[in-house]
Length: 318
Image 1 (cartoon, rainbow, N blue to C red):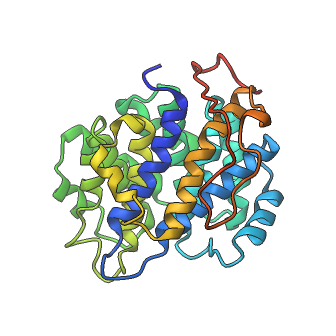
Image 2: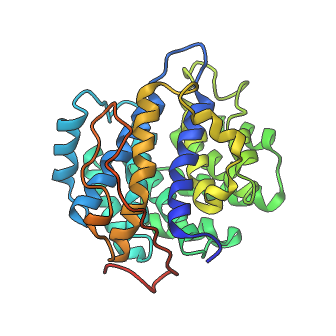
Image 3: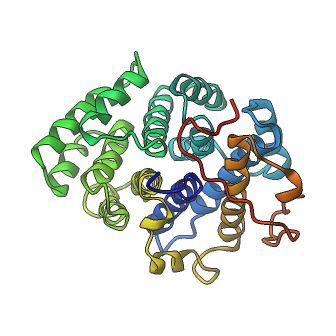
């Protein structure tokens, strides 16, 4: 494998958080990054505890641990973040992946654009994990994976495919996908930033965040957050932690993050090894997290570090 699976998972979540942090308006107090990390923690913990997806367990944990966490406002990016651990856990089997993503989306009442966007991102991430992502065929594969739908996302993705084939620049792509106030445009723009700079995570995320004149107009920064968060997750899955510059990780140090953002994302990174171990079938609680930390605490009981490295379809729990 080009990168260990656990590094791809950490890269996915780290890329998503970096995207949220970079898009945050410095003049406004923004809880979006904190919400992203909390949602990711809930999903990862539920899968680790049960070894499978259980919506009731997820909702119960949500009410118990984060009763004030709003998972409906800004639904598209939050739904995609919540399903990232699901995409990892079921990445090796497309049918299993699709069904579990659809099961997870019951939380958001199967909103059509949330459904299609989540399936598109989940499929692309799974292709990254199995090292089967081919830019020339990815878009048609995603459209087939989404299936029949009432949204405009398939049409937008086909338009994106043409734009990529022609080598259209960033400003032209922005102009093309900003003509209508349509969430599918945001998803298409995120895929443009990812696929047009496939091997360069910093450039992909910075291009996604370069929306000053078009996307930030009367949107309170939400559109830019959606694009950069999705781009960061996709590019992180493809390039893993190896693609994230050290100086960018400084953005996630305590002096640059609110305490909630830092605490919860530290949990996500700690849980990554355990989640991959559960997926691979070699999880041993005695070697992993004995207790999950309470909110506001980033220290864990002393534990041995267990890293799992496996080629696709060689070690798995199903």
